[in-house]
Every structure is written in structure tokens, then in C-alpha cells.
Length: 224
Figure 1 (cartoon, one colour):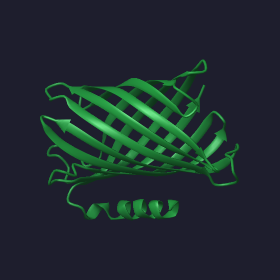
Figure 2 (cartoon, one colour; figure 1 turned 60 degrees about the vertical axis):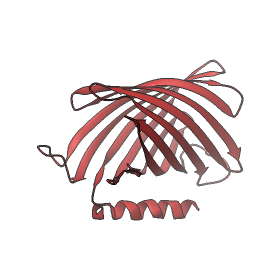
Figure 3 (cartoon, helix red, strand yellow; figure 1 turned 90 degrees about the vertical axis):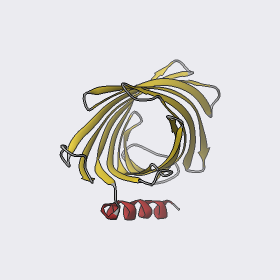
């Protein structure tokens, strides 16, 4: 199942340029997790997005450009050993303007035999200058598995897969987006991991102008 999912993403990435509207780029990020006591946790993410290819690309703009920078902070509180609720805030700088997003979420983590399955339900509200407010509902399912043995040890690789569905509403118009991510991670230590993979997105699925995007996703994950 995991191999089929990876192959599907690779094929989609390789054939992306054949679509009418698409983007290819790089998505680097740094994630830091701070535990506060037994129940609270602060998750922060700094992410940039570099575009290398756009077809078609906007008039009076270059095909390749650094598109945006995001800073996201989410505080979560454990309800039990398997689920947690959280709220947070994201600020984005793009095209010389700032975007503000307010986040609410509920997450479940299930320990399976030699793997982990996670579910995340998230709502968010986006406010941007000279734009109508945007409301989204998101559901993400994730799967993580060590590639050696039953548990993930230091200096070992692991596989991470996720699939996310996003429904949005803006100016009384709805839309849908689907995302898929396949990453290979390396566990440097219990508090330090690096990951690299392909992040594929299909946006505006209800609209007639579907946008296909694929990014090389590189992440550094730290725990304190």
C-alpha cells in the first residue's frame, strides 16, 4: 500500500508539466516542539516556498521566485493518551502583504504494530487585506512506520505518508483541495529528525481551473 502511494506521487510529479496550470518548487521548513508539563505542548513551524516553475506564470512576474514565508504556532492540550485539542495562529508574508490565520484542531494518534496512525481535524479562518474572509475545514490522515524493526531507534530511517482534504468557503463560494505527501525520514536522535519527500496538491477542484502543485518538501524536526 505504501509503495503504491509513493509511486502514484512520483508519477504525478513527473507528469505535472502536461497540465494546463501547475507549479513546481521547494518547500523547506523547521519544526520545533516544546513540551510544557505533562499535558501542554507548543508546536511551531517556520516555512518558506520557492517556486522554480509556473505554467502559466503571472504577467510581469518571473517564472521562478521566492513566493512566501509562514510562521505558525499551535498550542495543544492532551485530553488522554491518544487525543488532544489545540488552537493557534499563522502569519504569512507574501507579495509585500501579511495574511493572518486563526486555527482550531482536534488530533488523534493510534499506536499500531510497528507503526502509528494519526488523524487531524482542523478549522481555520483567514484574514487578508482587501480580501474576503476565508473559512476552511481540513481532515488529514497520516501513517508513520520505521523501516527497520518494530520501533524507531537512533540512526534509522522511517517512512511517513499523509493524505489531506480541505474544503473552503470564500465570498459564498465553496472549493476543494486534496494533498498527498510521501517522505523518507532519518532519526538522528529522539529529539532530532530530518525528512525529505514529495508534496503534491490539487487545488480548485470544484472550479474549472484546477491547479496542480508539487514541491520537494524538506523538514527539520526538533523537540525540547
